[in-house]
Amino acid sequence: MRKVMVVLVILMGAAGLLFWKGTADPLKVSLHRVDQGSVEDTVANTRAGTVRACQRSKLSMQTGGTVDALLVEAGDRVEKGQLLLRLSDQEYQAAVDQAKANLQVVLQKRAEICFGADRDLREQSRQERLAAKKLTSEEALDSAKTRAAMSSLACKAAEAQIEEARALVKLSEVNLDRTRLVAPFAGVVAEINGEIGEYVTPSPPGIVTPPAVDLIDDQCLYVRAPIDEVDTAKIKVGMPARVTLDAFRGLSLSGKVSRIAPYVQDYEKQARTVDVEVQIDDVPEDLNLLVGYSADIEVILEHHEDTTRIPTEMIMEGNTVLRFDPASKTLEKVTFTPGLSNWVFTEITAGLEPGDHILAALDTEGAVEGAEVMPEGATAAVSDNQR
Image 1 (cartoon, helix red, strand yellow):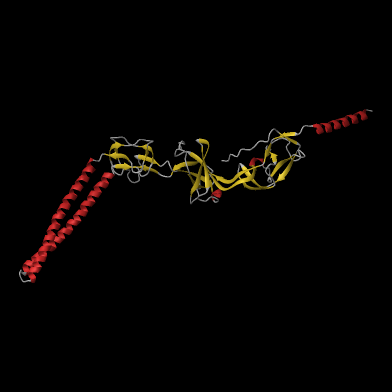
Image 2 (cartoon, one colour):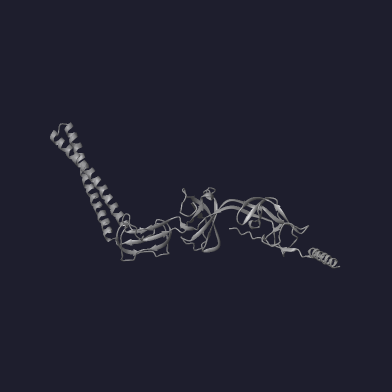
């Protein structure tokens, strides 16, 4: 009798378990709807890059002297050729005036000497005509020829003196220009070293001294960043790229690869990298993008538009996903053929179609192949924000 009771209890427990299994609620899961959009194949830098200016000059004076006028301040925007700083130039200006006065004197002397040379040449011609008629002596003719030759040489010497005087004027003007510092290009003044009344000296050879003016062309900016040597082999000059900055989260600037370094950097305890430069296309006027900011670059190797895609994080090993079968309300494992892929999206070339629903959260407990599931709420759409 006791044995019969035990068997009945076991049978009742088994029947209850089967009944519970048959009436258990399906597992609630979050599904993602396969859609279409853009997918890119990209490579990014391994360490932070730096924003740099296409032109940056640390300007120094070519001669020593006392600062007489400081015509700009740090932060001022200047045009090409604009005067930035001037040294005391009375001595150099006086030298220019003296050289110009000397040139006028030499010009006057040349006029007098060459006028006399013309007169002597006419006298020589007159003596030659008289000699042909036997109306003058040979001595007079020879004397006229000698005077004409000597005065012609003196005229040529006066011409050479004029060239020398003009060169002296040019030299004195060059020395005067050395007391003036002008902008070699349009840009913004980053730093000024010097005050009115201070004495400045040019940098001696081999000795670095602070520049008088640090000028930056902030209208042309680029980012230099290291990229792994393996990835660099895929990059070519002219490829499109994106630039992101730590100082401006969420902002992405477009650019193009402008230079790939012709050598590999080999730093101790670091992967070998190649410096890649990306020139920024357009900087928004309201963006205070400063030279020296840290930045990252992402070079776009290939881009496909309006292609079937799924989030990369939803892919399982072997290029498989768990697709929801609305007929049986179960998850089925599907193998697909991938195309382009990055850490955000993966392109689907075969195996899935737009409108299919796949398991969104792979860490959902119990969500395995063959499990009966129920979509949880509305199917969430995945944002198309790509870096």
